[in-house]
Length: 85
Image 1 (cartoon, rainbow, N blue to C red):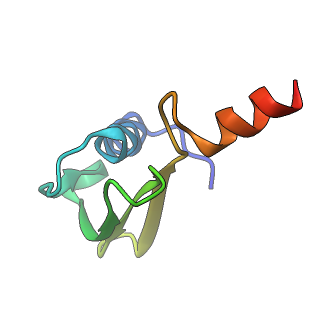
Image 2 (image 1 turned 135 degrees about the vertical axis):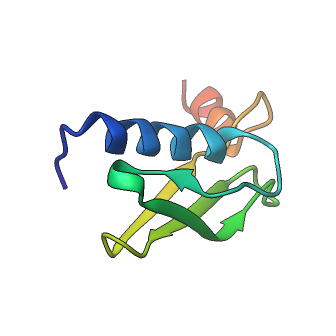
C-alpha cells in the first residue's frame, strides 16, 4: 500500500513508535477522516527481544502489523555477526 495522506502517514508512524516502546498497552491511534486503528494483539518483550503489534482499522478495513527486530548488545544477530567477522 502506498499512501501520501498526512493523517495516515502520521498514524503509521505512531504505530511504529508504539511498537518500539516497552509499554504493554496502548489506546487507539487516530487515522484519516476520524478513523481509528485499534490494537488487536501484541508481543512485547518476547523471550528473544522481538516485539510486534497488530492494529485494525474498521473504517478502512486495514490491518497494520508493525514489528521490531531483536535489540541490544546481547542480540543473537549481533553475536552471529561478531562470530562471522
